[in-house]
Image 1 (cartoon, rainbow over the protein chains, first blue to last red):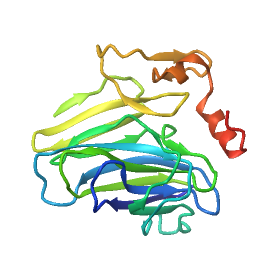
Image 2: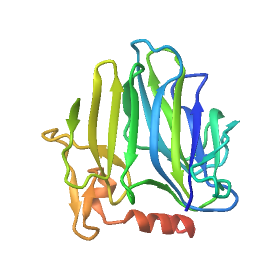
Image 3: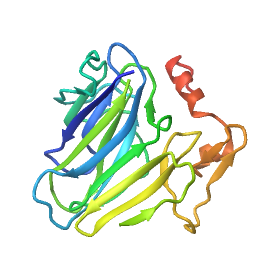
Length: 148
Length: 83
């Protein structure tokens, strides 16, 4: 099982737009998200935003392809595909409870081994991070780490 | 640093850092839907514990009404038997 990370952002920071979406690739393997970091990519100001981590079942997502980073250089490339700055959202989203965050703060969630957020080994299923609401336009940035 | 260590065996940890310092929270994971939540003693939120799965339940109606373990949900999704 290899560990990988990908970084995403969202240029159009409005509601229901994803920063990053990691989806099961053609070689189907379960994705286990164990670390999520959310911050601000520009000089932050006092403004509120709410983010959400979601599971999705659809494969219609479109965005900028992310180059995944393998934690172990000896591992093969990730089978999952990661998209950033999504322009078309995946379908079948199921949201986890929202994460309210002032843009001056950085949020990090780390799962204990065995308690990761899991996407089933079914093509096009995946896990993403999206903006649920924001008080003003800004440029959030997000790093997701996963096992597969 | 404010620490919210509230569970002997948390399923995860949240760290929020900013100009006002660092705040930490423990999270638990629902054995039925797999979601995580921050433990807030005295919040009044109704949670549960599944005696079959031997783990905490988030309190959502679908998770409280029947035992459908998350691992079983993954297996069903992968085999196309989504209930």
